[in-house]
Length: 256
Ligand code: ADP
Ligand code: MG
Image (cartoon, rainbow, N blue to C red):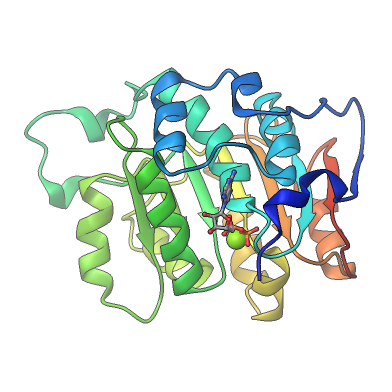
């Protein structure tokens, strides 16, 4: 799997929607936060992949996005780079008081991430989390991961210790929200990664419950990014329901 990175420019890209921001050609064009740029180059990435060339400026322009691209095309960086670029620059929000008050016990703490990435499986969630950790190196942003089929108490302790960017499988997240451990009140970025697989696995009710939550900021404040390898009818409906004035991006050959 994976794309041939030498053949970047042969890959057909379709971008549509109102006022599509133009793609970048290298990371320098994205004027990334210097610490983030350093962390990206430490991970060995020299040039953005095609999906990253488009998604970084689209996301930085505060646009919603529906991106279809094959496995191995670099979608993870496609959403992590612009989200972290935003986060590094704003710094920790000081109104998330319960996080910052010294002396508050771990028991009382509630995780209040600013970015939520939904992923279908434990393996994929862990991969995204591991990548996020590399890019967050030496920054204030604390990534966190929760998934089903593992001890929830350990994950509760982990989330309370620090959770600015949360990677989660839908079922486990609903459970942790119900237990009052995680609040989505401060979410600014919502990513549905491998959206087609999440629907195939039957997660649509949980996803709708999370996305349509009342304590999430209004649709105009939140930016929603959907990534999928295919673009079947059920994903088109989800995009219509969740995204506003979005850019549709299709990289390479995409099935429906
Ligand atoms: P996808 O989510 O589209 O399946 P990934 O984000 O997992 O793809 O990336 C696939 C592989 O490509 C990973 O091994 C990743 O480290 C690598 N990769 C991603 N972006 C770049 C880049 N800009 N330059 C070089 N390698 C990259
Ligand atoms: Mg991926």
